[in-house]
Amino acid sequence: MGALFLVAASFLASSVEMVEASTIVLAVGVSREWRSTLIGVGSALVALAAIVAALGPALALIPIDALRLFIGTLLLIFGLQWLRKAILRASGYKALHDEDAIYKRELAEARAARSELRAGMDWYAFTLSFKGVFLEGMEVIFIVLTFGTTQGSIPLAALGAATAVLLVGTVAVLVHQPLSRVPENGMKFVVGALLTTFGLFWGGEGLGVAWPGADAAILMVLGFVLVTASAFVFALRRTRTEVTAAVRVAGGPALD
Amino acid sequence: MGSLRRFAAFWYDFIVGDDWILAAGALVALGLAGALTRSAVGGAAWLILPLAAVVVLWLSLMRATRGR
Image (cartoon, rainbow over all chains, first blue to last red; front, side, top):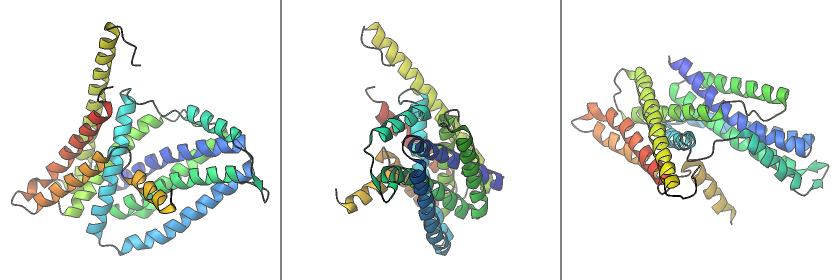
């Protein structure tokens, strides 16, 4: 159960980050110039590899309980942030993440930006693609290292992430368009629940909490988090509908 | 903005994000569970974590949707 869970969690989380990175790279490449864009992508990958080479062995030196508590705390904070955003989007309080709209906005900004050719490079394209890949890649690295270290298998976490990177990367190259059909909002909801669950579980383990059923408690906590988060979506949707109706009756402007 | 402030702002945004309540609440929840683990009712410490997490999440959602 643990191995499958680890690969699936790492795959899902990394897929979301890859979709976002590919949208930025596509928009910059199409609107500016592909050579500088791809050099930016390559440079970001080299920088990320250097971070992995530095961080990976360092993590192995930290006592496992301290590491679990530290990583669990970070995962819990990230998970709650993702869940909050996903719930606000699902209940209509925040606009849905729309890769098409983001692609169009990036495209317009890149086209409007001044062309800055130095040493045969478009530095605007380089910087934008470097930043996009580096920042999203940092999140993938964080997920792989934290999931892998705490579950005792970085290779399995890396397998899930590598599969996501290859799959999303290949599809992005083939369709040459933002991957707007990927159900990103739904995936973020699930990933938020997974990060929260792992954060609670590992944070608790680091503190010496005795979970009933040991590793099987992960499923129980995940179920609880998913059901509660879904209930929050339902409750907020209902509140929003009622407020909208009340505003309409009062003759005020529509909220949606 | 100085590079040190930008660096700090990047990490604050990366870790704390949109609502500091979530980060603070996560720390309080883990602190409570840790304290409970070392008490006479340590066996029930695991219950605190998921319950505290959903309470913190709900508080943050209420803050985000208040007046909207």
